[in-house]
Image 1 (cartoon, one colour):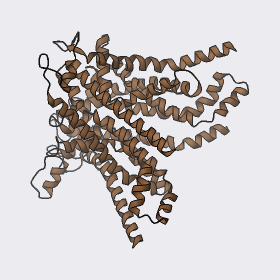
Image 2 (image 1 turned 90 degrees about the vertical axis):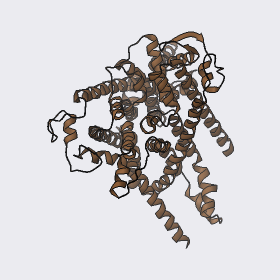
Image 3 (image 1 turned 45 degrees about the vertical axis):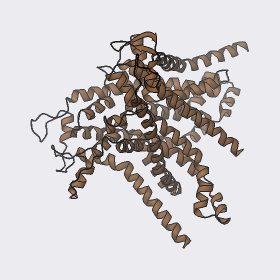
Image 4 (image 1 turned 180 degrees about the vertical axis):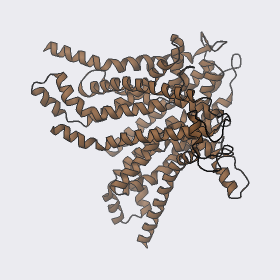
Length: 286
Length: 296
């Protein structure tokens, strides 16, 4: 009786978890499916597969003939993608350096303001996006700085430094400090020790932090929304605007392409992370 | 020796300065300016007059006497609604994630890693696209109503632009935030405690509430706080799934900055949001400390 009850409970738990994963992925799957639906009138009713919406994204002709497509212009979309990439790459470079430096300072030096810095580095992550967004808006307008790519890059760095800091700090905390001591004892200069010992060991953390910064910067909507100018629309802001103007089948196609891109990045990132312990061992032996 | 000390100090300075510069100038300074703005008089065309003006807060909290601004309870209503929706979101994410965390923790290693991958993946995919999916599902001619129609049920249900829609959207996007800390605490559970509790004659129900649940409480608390904070200040979910019907504090702030152009009032609302978040964090830290004290 008891074991039957236990088995029933386990079955229920399994069913519940299956429902959990369906809930997680069904909405995303719907977008992908509908992006291939050729029905131009009601995208919810399946009318055969086609690549029309993808063709129209890139300004190619499609089975709907010369009828004007819904996307304003594929140039705008590509421009938004370019803007997003420019911003994300610059942001990633700056916040990776600044965040890694800060993590090294807090982990390897003793100084008076240590406690203060620890709290300070957490604050940007805990601040609601919208508060940071409007604070930056007031600030940039106040100092007379035009809103554009530069203001967005600065805005993203303010909170992404914290993310990189956190990831690299976790890596530093799990590191064997005796390796650095041994290197110093054997007469290596601090710079040499850093280049040959510390950097290779924390590199997976640095790469992980950079990847995280890149993804969050590419995806940020709220802060960017407040501090972007007319000529600096990023991809998420552009898509947000499209959705608010009305649902069109091309959005499904854009969304599917973006989903594929982020799945690839995530898979690579998670794969790298799963390999981390192995690489560390090799590094310490080599 | 002193040169070595000096060089170390220089290194430290070099390591600290980039982040200090960016965070000090572009994070702390803007927040200080925002706090100042919240107490200034709104100018005619979206600017500010440099006069002390407590009525920005008075309009919301009740001391505006009507000479300059009216107290309007609608703002308090919206703030209360934000708290309510954020609290329900925490509860719903917990309800969804807690049992699933137990199931995942029991799987063999390969399956477990795959599940973790599936749960982390949405975190890497665009937020706006995950919300867009729910617009497709919930809107009047969306997936649910089309499916109902196909099944012969010709009574479309109105789902989008309701509190339910906002709750579904927020729960959906914050699931990974809740799952990770809860899973971490479930994975650490010591099975021997359960066996001991069963040996001593406790029922499964008793074991759960007396042993398992208290031990996962730190994970639940951490998950709750990291879901609650972004839910409270959210404006993207209410703007896409709540429309003009379901406003939250975030929507109010956005309106003041981009439509009404009353920046001091918007800054005051943002200050209230920030204070609310700070109070939550302090309460969380206090609760953690008490927990630790209780254990030791």
